Length: 154
Image 1 (cartoon, rainbow, N blue to C red):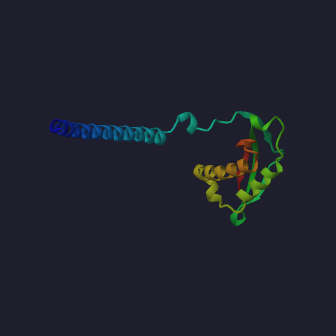
Image 2 (tube, one colour):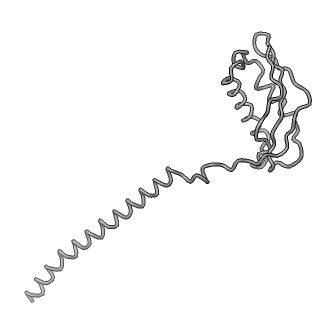
Image 3 (cartoon, rainbow, N blue to C red):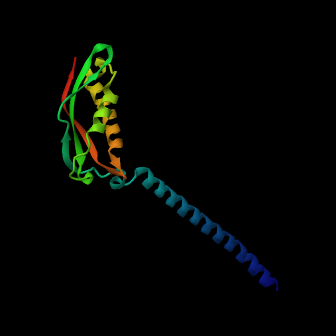
C-alpha cells in the first residue's frame, strides 16, 4: 500500500507539469492566432480595401454655359460634362439636378478661392461628391466624374 502511495505521489507532479505544458501550449497558440489575425486585419486585403473603379460610360454635357454670381460682384461662367458609369446605363442622366448643384456649390465663393489650382480642386471635389450623391440610385453610381468645358471668372 505504501508503494501505491509513493507511485501516486510520483505521478501527481508529472501530471501537473504535463497540465502546465498543455496550458502554456494553448496560450501560445491563442496568442499566435490573435497576433496573426490582428496583422491581417490591420493590413487589410488590397483587393477588398480598394473599391472596384467604375467603368466609364457615356459623357453627358450641358448644352450652354451657366453664369454664377460670386462674391463682391464677380461672376463665374461655367460649362461642364458628367462622366457617367457603364453601370448607370446608356441613357443620359437628367442634367437639371447637376445644374442646380453647380449653382449651389459655386454661388457666393470668393474669386481668390477659384484662382488657385488647389482652391479649384477643393471646390471641384465638393461638387463631385454632391453629384455622386445625387446621382446614386439603389447603390448604383450613375456619375463618376465631372469635366469642366468652360471655367471663366471675372
